[in-house]
Image 1 (cartoon, rainbow, N blue to C red):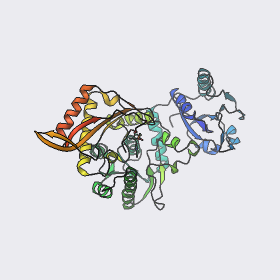
Image 2: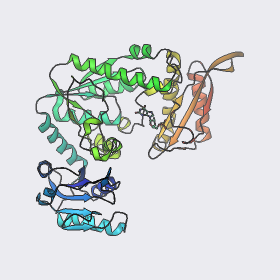
Image 3: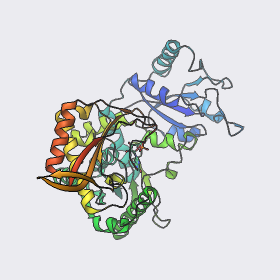
Image 4: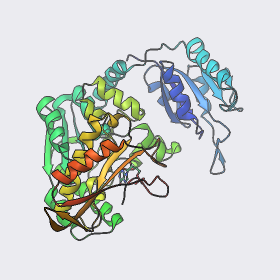
Length: 435
Ligand code: XMP
């Protein structure tokens, strides 16, 4: 194994990720584990050079005062307590909210002077270590992976492919709600360029018939999610001898389902909901990475820029941008107008400045005029927002000339459109998506 590691034990502090990122910024790999890890489990982790018990003020969870196991202090690696007054550690760190500079120095001195860790955390070492760990876990068995074409699943696919080659079986389900060219790009990159074992399922008709006349946004989401699992399950049943399920789980996914459950990743996975009798062991090589690190890993693995820096895209895809009951003609209108918007944003360099941008097509028409005759056609709404965490969002002011050019192209090139609008609403009161 190439890289040294500092383990942070989670006693419910919200500062865990800040600390992990600060240590990684020093060039030393750091992972967060639940407070009740055993000494044996700790020793089984590769290259652990030190442990930080990060209690903060809240190591009472649900009325129970939690602590690390006493055996951790005798596990043979230096232990530092951060804001954790009960621990009998060699090194103590002030509360993380105290003096930031003092904390930085204390952490730096613990990592390098006490633990003698080497600053050898980089993506090349990470990828090589993960390849070794995946091979150790999987051996010569097979791994199944739902490859959506999103950043996380694409990076996991590339990493697993490097580690186990054709023992990785990827399934790409096209639900008919993908953006223009997306399924094609997955096939081109993974099947044609990387020679991956890729099963492509065009389930467009199946999804669209299930969605027929369904106008309620929540109902649409449920149908798309449920059908996705059914299609994936059917493919999984056709395959024999699969023991593992690859997952693009990343660190924020684990945090969202509660840090106390960090070890129980099985309760949170993207293809959750598979039936009981389809039991797989999970392979989650990105589960300790933050989004920017996942992208860096993708670059290291040689994935195309567009795939690695792809803007966020909701699971239900264009389904939530084709408002109300989905029809094929309006879905085409969303897909074609979105492609124009993306092309023009890229040309103007806005793809690197704007967090998320897309078009929406409502389920009502308006009156217009074309070729001297009355038209009654769909409007297209443009949305472009910036955000840090998607909880709130602001509107990116777009150059008038760019908006005019996009409007002009949509009106000329997309069938049955006679009006283009720009959505100026921040979140709140609006949400980013319209449904
Ligand atoms: P809202 O519309 O809630 O969206 O402001 C916040 C962010 O989440 C994305 N989004 C989804 N992502 N499944 C997903 O994977 C979904 O059902 C879903 N709904 C919204 C949205 O694109 C935005 O980035």
